[in-house]
Each structure stands twice: as C-alpha cells, then as structure tokens.
Length: 311
Image (cartoon, rainbow, N blue to C red; front, side):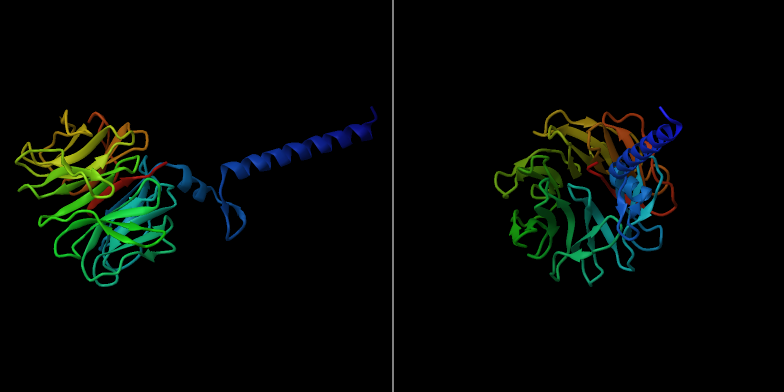
C-alpha cells in the first residue's frame, strides 16, 4: 500500500469517527433553537429529576425548580403577584399553577423556562390546587365559584368545565390516581377534614380516613397502591401513608414541627415534603419508609408545595 493511499484511508476513518461522534452528541443533548447548537443546560433540565415548589425568597410568591441533589435552582415565574400550588404536566414539558396576577386566583400553565404563560380559568372566585391528569387531557382543581370549595375538572381540548363534587362543606386538594380513573381529595363533609376518593367523573365517593384530627394533602403513589397524606392525628402535622383503600395507615415522619405536602418520586421509592423542622418551611426528601430524611432547600424564606417531576 502506497503512502498516499494510506493517508487517504486515515482521513476517511477520522471523518467517519467524527460523524458518528456528532450523531451521538445530538441524541444525548437538546438543540437550542436560538443558536441551533446543543445546549447542555437545556438537556440537563429535561432529563434530570427535579422538584418544583413555591417560595417567597424574592419577597413574593414565585414558582421555582431545583434538581434532586440541590443544584440548578431555577426561578420559573416572574411576577409581582402570588404564584403557587405548582404541579407537573405528565410529559414534564409544562407546569400548572395558581396565580392572582389578574386580580384573583386563577389556573395558569407555563413552560419550565417560564415562557408561554397561558391562563386557563376566568372567574371572579378562587381557583387553586390544580393537578394534571395522567393522560394530559384534563386538569382537576378546587374552586369556590359556586359558593364553597368544590372539585372541578377542565377538559383542555374542548375547554369544558365539569363540577365533580357538590356538598355544603369544603372539598379540595385533588390528586389523580396513576391510571386516571380516580381522584383522591380532602373534605370536611363529615365534620373535620378527612381523605376521600371518587371516580374521575365524581361518582362513588368513598371516605378513606376516619379520625377526629385533620387529614390533608393526599398524594397517590406511582403504582396506585398507596396514598400519602398529612395529618394532625398525633398532635401535630406529620406525613402518613396508607393503602389506597384506606387501610394500614403508617406514620412516616416524627418531628414536633409541621410536616406536610407529600409528593412521590416517579419510581415510588422516595417522598418529598415541606417541613418547619429547621425553623421555617423548607423542602425535604426521604425514603418511602420514612428513613434517610435529607434537606433539599436552605433559605430563610418559606419553601413549600413541592411537586416531583415525572422524570
């Protein structure tokens, strides 16, 4: 083989390796449309597990996101009004939240980078506690538009509003089952706040908890077998978990301060929650059995209403 032919073959080999390398980079990264290049931060934002939460660390209530290891804190909303009750879309591309930026609490959605803010409800009552259905087609929320807090769903395709509950007491904190067939919620219909479940069309309402203390903030596990919630049944708010039928209630946290707002990791192995155990509300993460509690945020403001990303 001549020297010139050998050099030609080497050049071809280098070119092939370069092309293959570029192809692999494009699969692993995300293209930044503004510069048409791969943006590693955008790629990290999409594939890294995150928790969104509400914080007043900038002197008003805004929505933030943070990686599970406590890095890459991002401010999602930027508005002088109150933005809170955040929840993820099932594909992880958008979030839904409540805001009074137009005078009273309404339901809005936005992309994770804070762009494309869209208002979904328009009523002079208070709309809050939004949560996306697993198929992405509906949003459940609580509203006082008929005089007291009830649970509603909004069809995002037809923009049709459906009232699910109809009771003189307050119904709120809706949480979809992973299969989308049921909704758990908190209600005071039997004298104090308990956890209930109903079919997604509002029928077949069943009481799950029965205690003279307050039970709030139900959150369905990803496998649909358990529901985490917060309760004062042992004197102060702690995190508990029960089977989806209301049996086998187990206490997960043991702290004299408030523990509330449980949210499950996508694999069901961990639970994030907000707590005042260090003086002010911060976001914490623990194993699903209540062990290995880790503090995620650390700020002198109030951080709460966590919601775990679907990835």
